[in-house]
Image 1 (cartoon, helix red, strand yellow):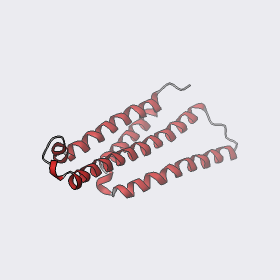
Image 2: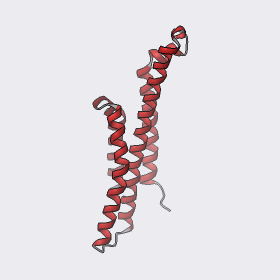
Image 3: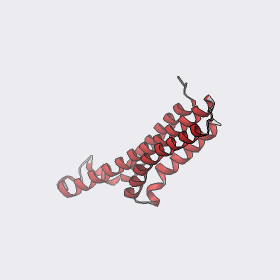
Image 4: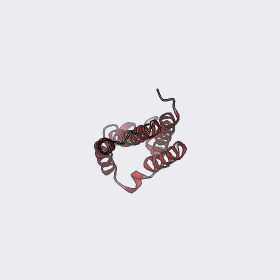
Length: 145
């Protein structure tokens, strides 16, 4: 079961990192992630209240899955916020160089960065995706203490 959840979160994260900003604007995505950071813990507290209200004593396996789900959602949210922030930083640096450093636009490393924006974007998205694989692996298969 943990393998299935791990695979689902990896697929979801791949979609969020590489495809979401092509579907919605970064501002809309950031607002969605921010609201999700508030909604996910609220839903967790409601679920915990329902479990306690019906006097159900959950098994340790259920608790491990529940905690891993919460941590996985927070990893997705925070990591994708970082991807949006990195994209904003790259675009603002590029715009700054165009407006305030027009004399040196053809010199390296400014010209390299301006000519390879898509490659830089793919590079940091790939790095964040690789880091998310490690974090999700640690959440789902790491040793519980």
